[in-house]
Length: 358
Image (cartoon, rainbow, N blue to C red; front, side, top):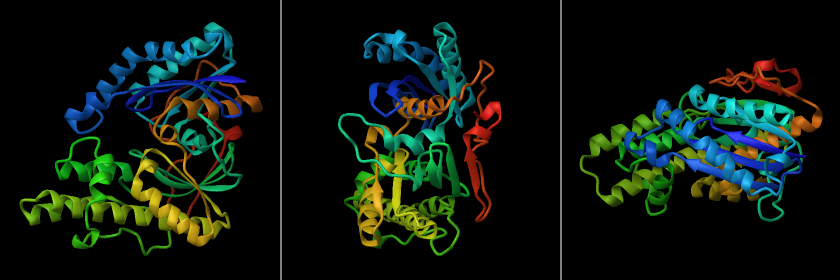
């Protein structure tokens, strides 16, 4: 089965064609980073307008890479949330139009589920993939949470951030230090040349048993430290970046391994845009090896927002016989893998979702 995937939840317009066994046959992403950079973050109205301009050319480029083009497609999968509503609507309307015109099944995909299954994408060679179940740390600009993934259709949320997502905290810290947007890669690069021990910053919730995160206090601590330090030279900024990254990464990895231990699952997957962070990958690799936990990190192209992961997640539902009708709608916050309190969990069973969440 070949599935056309469409992704437009935030600031990337993307289309891809993926088989139900994970082979990526086409993958096109149009980024809006340059558009939003002057504003220091994503502007929803500008994002929606850019999606309108880009959706047709992106689809054409993706389908041109597929022998047989649109006629070879067996189904259409599209991100229906969570994300920016105006942006999501562009992708969903395009998916409905194609499914109706071609007479093929339509399936809505939760963006978070796409990230959790991105590790199964096969891009250029046989990538190592985990067996079920596995613990997944999904860490990006909009989401930071831990899950136990038992199958593509059975996912349990174990904990999430109480406030800022880790990627959002990276971007805000970078902005406070005058590093520009997007800030995550710039903080990561400077952290490699800095001394984390020179800057005292907190490690939020590090000593707590809950599998939860909090980064707003750390961001505030960076702002207060920078303000009190006065003029910062390049080395001092690098030291702040090193301390900030070390504290974020250490909490992320420690709680991920704690989840593995509590659940008796010796497999950890890092996914989401922040999974590309050098410091996160290095610490996870070292500590997983020490504790006998297998580590899986998708290629960079599979970590950031892309349509291939949406196509693959949709293919798993289509193979099972799931379908959505043209009443498919969008949602800004996930009704599937939503907020939890304390040690509470949220179970995702795709067969039990209401139509708006399927």
